[in-house]
View (tube, rainbow, N blue to C red):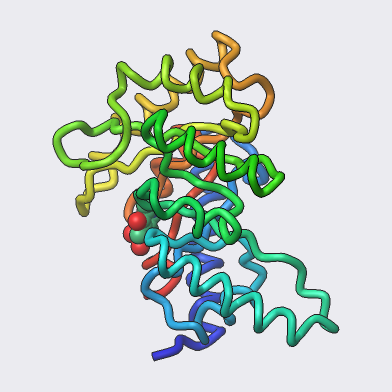
Length: 241
Ligand SMILES: *Cc1c(COP(=O)(O)O)cnc(C)c1O
């Protein structure tokens, strides 16, 4: 069932208010924090409504769905091109298999979920073939016991350095997923750990000026993530409730 525009707008306002509150607490600027609207459970009509509300960064966690969605939305935007809606950027936020990279790349602007050198090398090779440079984040497993994906905390700095030697990718930051619980405070240690790693790596000069994003925080825990320094929130269900 498609959701009404006013309902999604109300959800979005509530999220933006909480982001502003969390920024005030942490003495940060709300403009530093952007939202990737995760569309994995939304139908196409709802995705269009989200775009109409000004959400331009959209996220999908499965390759096939991202590819299909990007095509559908592109077709829709093309038919409406007189209205100057502008471009939509698709973020791949879920695990990517190397054999899907070739198909995913033309549709994805940013890949949040790079967790191995082999995957980064595959993206680099395909990006070179396509004549572009791809923005990516290194996914780190900051809550060891509960998450399947992401590189180990101890491996991240070296892996980041190796990724930075690839010429057709740009390492723009780190990403993590916290343990899924009802208690947002339980996510705080994982977010704080990612921020500490990020600061240390920046101090070491990893990635230069491009390396400036922390992709962390979902519907349950985005306020805590903002307090801990998130610059990109990945939010699905809180927009669609
Ligand atoms: C689904 C998903 C999200 C969004 O989750 P919500 O709880 O619906 O906000 C964020 N990040 C990743 C990697 C996801 O798969």
